[in-house]
Length: 354
Image (cartoon, rainbow, N blue to C red; front, side):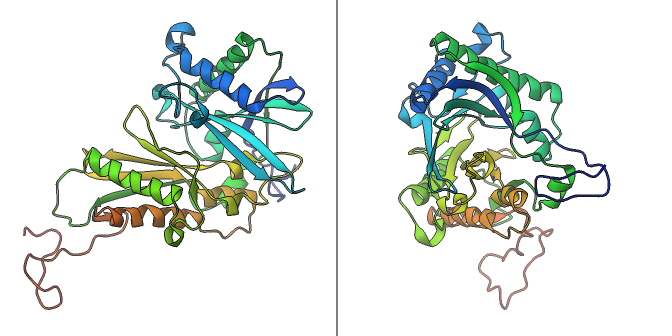
């Protein structure tokens, strides 16, 4: 039996379909204040130590809620739909050190269609398959169950009447879809000192200066390199493991990516840029989900180069703060000997001692 994929393609063989990427946790009757509901959910997670109260392996934390769940901890996302109406979404991002090797951030979305109000999460199992990861389904199910339990507990303690849905939804992709959607879903770039003989470690101060500059470009504007990208938070966020997160959003790329019948989170969510030190501080690593991969899933004819735009912002920020680096995926240039002209002098190969 031939299958029909999310991109509308068919094949002569039976296709394997992946789990849908979204998971509806709860529906509340009527149009509720989505900001209030997001605050209720975020505050519950912030105020409770789930390791103690719910016997979870580790405590969950709310991104941007160092002093409590204020407006800065909840993302206000607004989208223009196909019928020119505005779709408002309140997004709570949480993280758990026990699961940081699987994903740094997990999202809880609150939105309404005017008739009902919904609380959704990303389905960890579906996302794992779509992004070509090989994590344990047992662990992914545990993550989903913990997110669901926290949402339901928060609504229940706040005396909110709701219907437990616990169902997956969203576009259904086949293995053929994700194999067709190149490039790779995750972009990871390792930056080392431009001079290959420089073995000095990068410092936390280097990381702070770099991410401050990236944030500046996205917040205060730098038309030459930001190319329309803006920050969705007033401040960058530092996670427990030292990773600094900057969340970028490009309105021009989410225009017309939503549908009146179903809000599409994949195209609508901001891109989280993760910056951290690795390799005994010899490397600054920058990683993010590749927006071009997402758009290729949505539209097989997409030829956007959004990932390169983000890379340009990062690399121009390195230059601005005076950190001289090279992309470790690109072969380094042959180093010059000190005091010699590279055009006329014989230079050593990278294997020779200087």
